[in-house]
Image 1 (cartoon, rainbow, N blue to C red):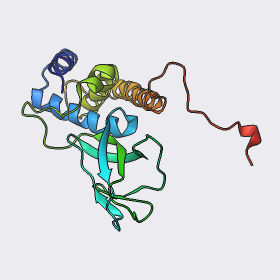
Image 2: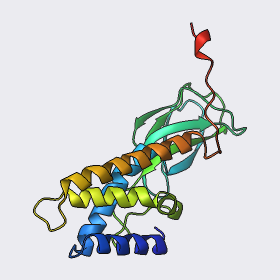
Image 3: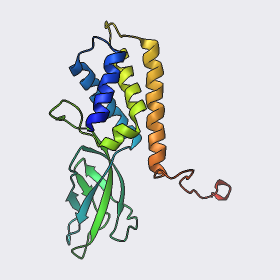
Image 4: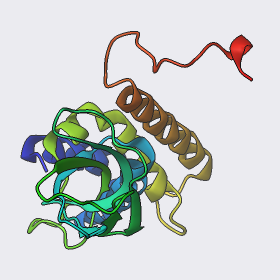
Length: 196
């Protein structure tokens, strides 16, 4: 996690929630990221799969975070390969039994936070996620803090408003991920009047 962005987030939370203990703020940052990342597809990781003759199941892992969802699988020429399925959170199934060794595929996964956190107590998330979606993460963390009962900062109406901003930020992040952050672009769909 980016030190500057996390320091800024913690400073903003300390101003918004005076008296809140840093461990409480860190826990709610983790909880906000735990909800935000799978819903927004803001963090995508890749894993390489090298096919072995006769083997349909492959173990996959990513260096940081936790696999949440299989997004796509492409071959060496970047052509989409359909039919791949997650058997478990770490096992992926090839659609056919390979009859030749050595074909290499790249799987892309929506990635979420996992425990343990960093030494400082923050979730291990790429810098660009915090930097790009700072306002949404701040709103989500604020909403989680405001929903706590019997605290000086408890404020259910504001929690509802902040949660709305948080969900809106996740939806925007998901839309940008599906458009690959291209300006004004949208995934192409066949015209609906020709649908059978």
